[in-house]
Length: 310
Image (cartoon, rainbow, N blue to C red; front, side, top):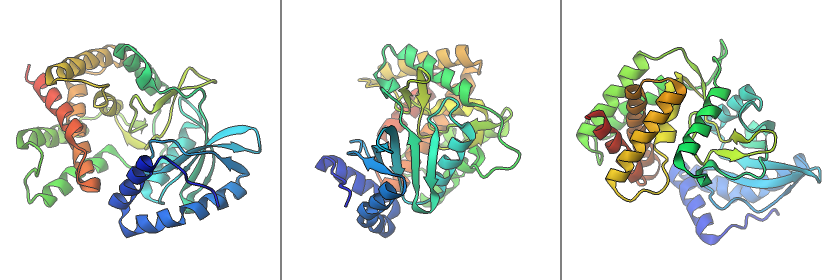
């Protein structure tokens, strides 16, 4: 059997995340994972190395294919989001993003180009540099969606607000009501007035851009969603490095808004609006999937809300 040895705390967090998201189906999938890795190793001629320590929703491990090709094996519970990732990797075809090498969709498995040395953008200083590099990656990967596609849309993602209201009987649950009202309104207004759509990464932030050999920086882990380009900045805004006070976070948000406006040509109000709306929606997804873990997203939403009042 292929070992799934990871540090016990990381393994516990991985198991917890899978079970919180998928329930009994997740437990069954975890029990079958060692056998699944054996099948994939044989099918793709892989030597699977120990997995990365920060496992969340997928089992991700470096591997060697055919004795000399470094690759990444990513395996998850088969679901529409994983299918969308496969489709967007095919669509990008290595443009600004890691290449897709092979798939086994029935088993929820992807074989992806390994980016080396693979240093994440989050390790780069100063913060201005990370924003400018991420913005350049955005411009490189965006292109109009194909005439026929099965990607989700930003409008479909926005229906999360409907499900949130239904869950909380029309209220906002643990989230500040004024903030939630503003986020829901902004999301609807921005989506209704969107610029022509492109295929977006959908989760392009500082941990999803790595150093590579065939390009200085390339993106990983795209979700694949169709929407206006300005939507893409939301994940980048709400993934700051460590910040100590609300005032520090507000300064960081303001600086990032300025840089993105200058680099990408978007209106500052549109950048902040998408950032606020998506931060609250991200908090809701954390609540729905896990019942915890939304504090940082709400803090970012509050900072962007205060920026909008200036």
